[in-house]
Amino acid sequence: MPRERTMGHTVEKIGGTCMSRSRELLDTLYKGERTEAQIYNRIFVVSAFGGVTNLLLEHKKTGARGVYGHFANDDSGAGWGEALKGVATEMMRIHGEVLDHGGDRERADAFVRDRIEGARACMLDLQRLGSYGHFRIDTQLMTLRELLSGMGEAHSAFVSALLLQRAGVNARFVDLSGWRDECHPTLEERLTRAMQGIDLASELPIVTGYAHCSEGLMREYDRGYSEVVFAHLAALTGATEAIIHKEFHLSSADPKIVGLDAVRKIGRTSFDVADQLSNLGMEAIHPNAARVLRRADVALRVKHAFEPEDPGTLIGPEGGTPGRVEMVTGLPIFGFEVHEPDMVGVKGYDAAILDALTRHDLWIVSKSSNANSITHWLDASLKSIRRVERDLAMKFPNAEFATRPLAMVAVIGSDLSDMAIARRGLEALEGAGIRPLALQQGLRRIEVQFVVERDRMEDAVGTLHRALIEETESDEVTPDFAPAAIAAE
Image 1 (cartoon, helix red, strand yellow):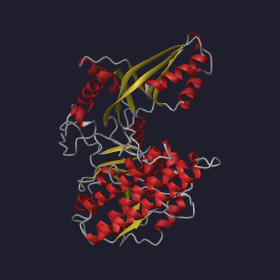
Image 2 (cartoon, one colour; image 1 turned 120 degrees about the vertical axis):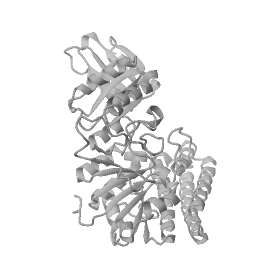
Image 3 (tube, helix red, strand yellow; image 1 turned 60 degrees about the vertical axis):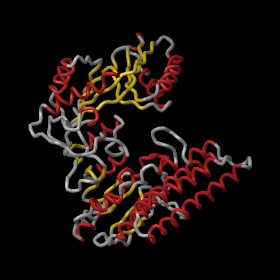
Image 4 (tube, one colour; image 1 turned 90 degrees about the vertical axis):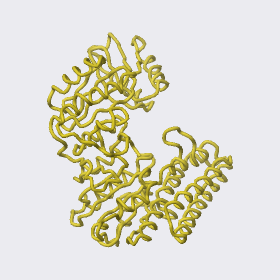
């Protein structure tokens, strides 16, 4: 259960891209023109500096191997050792640019050397164990992944604390990574122990976004762990608000598609909308983190890290204005259809298809069905869909399968109970010469989904944004934020 909100503090998370601009954060987010009282009563949860986790694990987008990738694929080779050396070099380069004082740089260098050499010793021990047939290194790979991942957050939190202390802020480095820790507490126990004895009225905790705990955050959330730690900390301490700082506002569309002068800051929305964004691969927050905040009744705010005076977008149970379209976004998908004339009146087809999709780990964005056809809209590779098709062909030899590359363009809002949204969207698309192949809207009225040809996705996003957002809002907003849409940092 969350603690009573008597402390009047916020818990705030900073993503890796913003962390790479730490010196700017000192003037905008950490300190700036704030009075001493305004500086405190905040807890900051920080991600690793931009690119560091990619070097430690693997590149999030390209899959290029980092230290973990090299070790997991060839634990006896020298590739992981060189990769680890490269991480140390990059960490020192980063904090060399962030820290001005020579003494602070020396402390940060020593911190990096300690962590890097500690990790190297662990990996060498694993390598030696692997040389004996009785031991299997693969059983320890997830533990190694956790250890390596925590090094990035520990480095950024330690450097940030040094930067703030040199600027006259009473910052405290709070390390949740469990470095050289002999116990394995639960996440709640780890957070509770870490926060004991901290006076938020006079101290500014800089907390690692990774927490070593018995649940194993990497196993459950992979690289979404920092937002989960952030959410649990906000719930546990009874924060008045949980705030995520990004280098852009939560906007109504991708400015690269609709134009920077056309997008709107959302301003206010619901957790339901945040869930829809996660389903479409554009996380405002990790869905598990949102669940924790929702249950603890802690509102979430997404702010522009370099525009501290702007209130950003509040995400809470109330949501935005009824009938207002808040976002239009698109996602390339595959339509996977199973047609079987004998399906009508027979149970088991849906369950079997779902089981095959789950077994091959395909992301289901949405689905539709009729008497003898079931179509799943999938965010997956064609290769993985073919595997599912082979499995199902053995189970349903008379079924016909069709896989088609398409795009889903979603119109999202806290309350779209007005059915005219779908009609207006269809009229706008028809006027632009775009013919939807499918249309869906659930009873909850949070989202209208238009399925179009893949090469018309951006055209459809722009058309729907103009018709449902730009032409319906009287107050023109000219945002001055970075040209980027919602993305997971």
